[in-house]
Length: 392
Image (cartoon, rainbow, N blue to C red; front, side):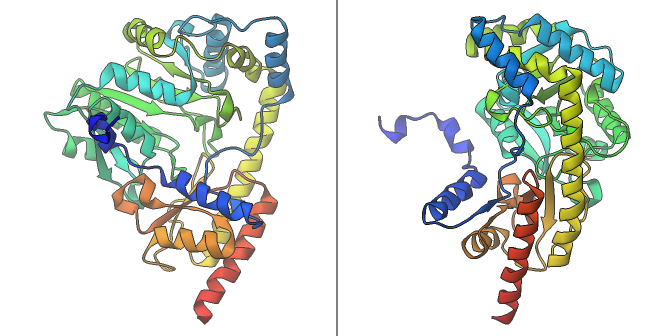
C-alpha cells in the first residue's frame, strides 16, 4: 500500500515521545546500563492476591465467554457500591458501562459526542492521547494555555473566553496527567455550569481519582447526571495490563454507547471483569489504601528533592503519581535535557513536548510510580549529573 492511500486523520496523531524515550532506554539496557525508569505512568505494584485468585478461578470455571457489551452485572453493581461508600453518591449500575480500559472509554465517549469539525476545549498541558481521541473522530482539540496560577487546569473563565460557534464541549482530567493536579471542586462546578449553559458536553477523566491525597474524596458525578465520567482499574487498582475501565453516563446515552461498544469491542475481557469484582473486597481495598499512602510518601520525598536539584515545582501535585517540574533554571530545552539525563545519568524523565506547546520546552514530567530506593538513587545520579555540567 502506498503511504498516500493512508487516512489523512493520521496526520493529526503525533508520536508519543515518552515511548520513544523508553525505546532509547531499552537500547542502553541491552548494552548493560542500569536505567531508572521514571517516565511511563505505570504503578510498580501489581494486582492484590484476591484479584489474581478471582481471575484464576474464572479461568478454572470456564467463565471466559463474551459478556454483555455493558459489562458483568456484578461488576457494574460493585462499581456503583464503591461510589456510594467512597463518595456518598447514588450512581445506578445501569449508568455504568464497563470498557476495555479507560482508552476504550474515551474512544466510545468521543465516538458518541464529537462530530467532524467539532471543537473540544482542554488545557495545555494535558495527556496527549486525549486530544488524539478527539482527532480520531475528525474533531479539533483546542488547547488552552494553563499555567501554575490555574493549577495547569481549565477554569470557568477560560471556557467563557474560548467557547465559540464550533465548540461542542470540554475534556478534563482531575487529577491530571502530566501534572498530578486536580480541579478544585468549586471551579469544576463553575466549568460544568458554563458548559451546561451552552448545551455542550463535559467529559471528566477521573482515572487517578482514587489516588487523591488531600481533602474529602470528590467526583464530578456529584455535579449532575449530564457529566460523563471515565475511570480505570489501571492506576489505583494496579491493573494496567488487564485493560479494564468504565464510563458513567447520562441514562439516555447508555443505549448509544452500548451500540458502539457492541460493534467496536464486543465487550471488555471477561477474565479481567471477574477479577475486577474482587478489587472491591475489603481486603483488596485495604491493600490499595496502603499503596496509596506509599505513593504519598514518595511524593513527599521527591518534590523537595527535585527542588534541591534546581527544579521548580510551582504546584505540588495533590493526586496521581506525577510531578510537573519547571527545568528552566537548568536548561532552555527540556527535550534535550531529558535525552542528556538518560544518556549520562541513566534516568528516564519525560519532556513537556508530549503534553502541549505551552509548557513543552520549560517543563519535565517525573513519575514516582517506582520504589523509594529507585527515587533516591535517581536523585543521587542527577545531583552528580548537574554538578558535572556546572564544572564543565
